[in-house]
Image 1 (cartoon, rainbow, N blue to C red):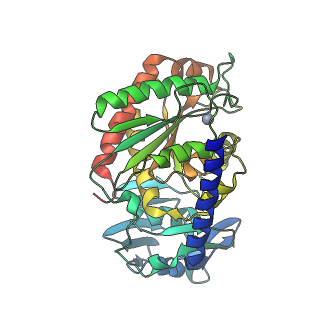
Image 2 (cartoon, helix red, strand yellow):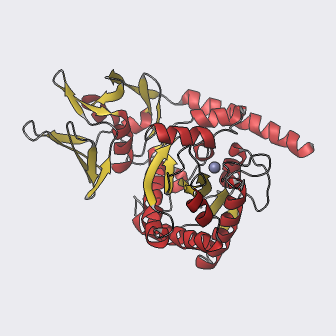
Length: 378
Ligand SMILES: [Zn+2]
């Protein structure tokens, strides 16, 4: 009772502090344009987001190149992909040319923030993108304190999804997602301990216990100490109406969901999101582009190593983005792994097995090693 009371007081105090901090921050806003039911921002507005941005475009080939911080991204008008560091990534809508202006899809704009190594805080509203003013000045001194040490990892938190009164999705035989995530979580936890003896390994739960989504983020954030750097990995299983759909997916947090399917998965996973006042405030905190860039790198690295370790068991459906409540409040690079589809009978039979979960653990370990080599700021 006393603990609850203290927590409440602390939450309230933090709420007041955050209100104060955010009322003091000046925001720069860039208008969002709706064209043919999709959202865009004008390229000329995009270049005001960071003083290092330069672009060139060739009206004959329609190729577009955008540069900043010694990084460059190539795209083309009317083409649904972009290239960064020699790799091609899919876009739901393409950059377009209209009324003698170039428009970038909102999704691509967010990709550019992380691909070009911006260090900004931002938020998408329905009519505009809000960006913290300090960042507009291109102040390189302003480093996000939580990600300062680029060459080490101090802790890893595994988050087995669901638990207790929240069973998550179900397999045909009635097996609940919460049980699979718990057993996979345990296997991954002990494998990480063995693979990284110098790194602290935590788990949000070791029992069949209900933990709210915001509590999971709080547990993760409570591990952050001065100059310490950690990553958060949430484990889940997918389900859909189609019994044929199969494969694993690695998600990172984004304000622009991939597509309708990602949206449905997000709504299912966010079912137990509460109306907690504190988390509502955290939700309204601006996204940090560096944490997002690192989450994306972590997702890509885990995805490519899982392809090696689990591909003959569960095929990879790639890296995706969605607005998962559990990732929203986590102040460190974070990914959510949908290990496979429980609605697919064969796949449910695979992911429930210890042998698969051990492969998953090996893939995650290899992915973390790749992430540490590839971190955007290294
Ligand atoms: Zn889940």
